Amino acid sequence: MKFTKATGAHAQDGAILFNMETDGVTRQFEISGDVLRERFGAADDSPNELLRAFEGAAPALQDAAHRAQGVPADGPILLGEGDFA
Image (cartoon, rainbow, N blue to C red; front, top):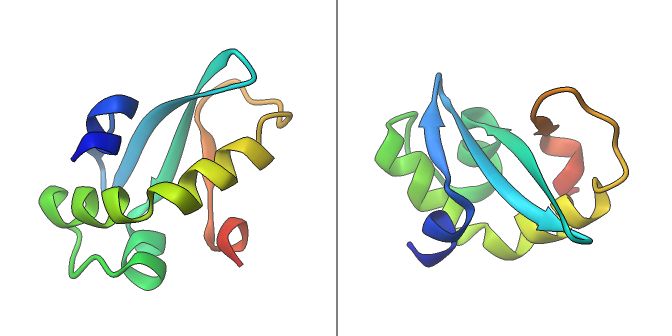
């Protein structure tokens, strides 16, 4: 779970919150359990399954975070199904 640890990822309310640095700025992101189940193979909404799928999705999450670096946000940047199409 190297990516999980490096990003400080944790499950919260059926989603995964994590931090990632893009262009020298650390920002918080959120990906829903729905996306992790439908797109990345999480079997259910349990924290262990969501984190397993999150870990496997590392390259796609890094790409999505890089593309979202200019998005203004007061809270976490939400990554949805469309960010991985």
